[in-house]
Image (cartoon, rainbow, N blue to C red):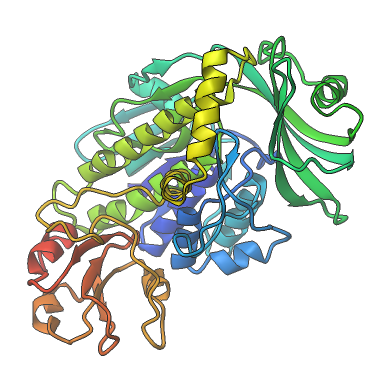
Length: 478
């Protein structure tokens, strides 16, 4: 074998996975067809759950130290969702995708893992022992496992001939990174009476400290073929149509057309090949859910691949990647479709759509509805099935970042191992056989006993013997 895992695609999903494998002590090759990292911002926000996962790896503070990344709030169909700190201890941050990619590239390089750029995959074959990948330059690489993180037009997915069902794109909208002048619009989403609309989100500042915005434009007559370049005149016309003379374009840094296509692969696992990120699911980029969902795919898969490489993974563990992440991806596609309907992307001003939006906007002012939608958009609503466990409210959800007195739970997870919180020191004997892959902590902390997987999800909690859960998720003792 040339390496344990080959990751195809060096975007946020691929680099997040590379870091997880690095932490697991697994040899990894990260290959990308592009000759250099993209300098386009693309996604612009990091959700609460992703921020928690980064904190669990000790990466959050260094990432936020890279620049001005203001706290922002989520939205559902353009309806702002108030910040609820009691539910989301780490509020959304405006961190462009380009910043995340640069940060991960430097972090991985500091640990000796450099992306192999200009490596275009052209073929793959797998057998019982591994996967052979062929590249356009005539080289080949043999790995135990291969992960496709190569985007919406995934070469790996095509080579697998994997089914990618869903809805094709029926319209396009414009997304642009801009500097604006004039009066600052008071709302994130603004509609004109004739159906034209604009959405604005913060992107931090440029190197000179000037504020940048993500601008999205749509409405009647604005759906053009993707290959037609977006011009400054088109951006100015869109701003003028919605805001009049109150807002002006000072600089257009980047623009593209995006579609409302909505697709998801039927299977995230194909033997020794796994699909993650946009290679597995595509949809309108609402709330940065594409990038965040892809990074969560990586956090879920990384420790499981590490367990398989090191030989202690139960036979079914790799299958739980599809079982857990496919429903999570499907839920994102559903909420994006609902938002697209309520936002009236095409600008039809259909009275039925407007009536539904009016009622939904009123409902979204209720605290319970805000909590539900906030969890949905932030990734906090995901609850993984945990077979063989009781219906404890913590099981299947992200572990709370409890202060255990000198350490927080997130800090304990930075080893990339499982964590058993044992405040009454009752389970030393039961957990002993798994000491090579699970740390026991929290003695005397006055918290509830719980077993936490390396990806930060609680897989057992309560007072009964944790041995069955330890065996289920961490395999047989050596």
